[in-house]
Length: 271
Image (cartoon, rainbow, N blue to C red):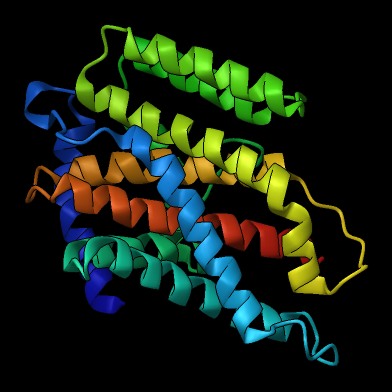
């Protein structure tokens, strides 16, 4: 992991240049539509759920919740990486991206603070630090509003996200700007639907049949959106140092977003 952190710190040399230019200059045009991330994210989350079920993590009720939480995070990381490996045929670049962002999203490490979402927001310090065009910033704020307001009607949220997606696709934004936003929108759409449907199964898996627990599927979605946007911005910045294969980047980010999802759900369900 230390080697991975060194690798990604090296990419931040490019972030300086990236942050001094508007997102989406011609040299940053991406070859892959990041909107595919959402469905990949859901498959990754399912892989993590199967990992929990196979491990039987709720079998020892004598443990304090602090002890199993560590093991849950280990299971999340292991199964998220296994999903990325399977999806990409063991692509080293995709695996490295997934490992680094799982570290950023899940580990309690001061070095990862800039990639942690600010309270009740999809913004991270890193997202805030990037210079954004006016149109991009307006649409990112709209995505943030969808993710953080009091609307908890699934169909309403999905409709609003579809409208925002149409606006983004028809806008004058560059392909890079569109991809960053589409990553967040896609993950939001799929994450909301997944956790709305599957929350009870996760509760049964982590706490046992018949146990009650509060669970906010919208809160999980907010964490996912933040991770998707933060991750997409970061891999775009990496292109200034050495272009990644965008298909690998999308797969790696999807796996990491799945891990972020599962981590948020575990945190809620164990409280």
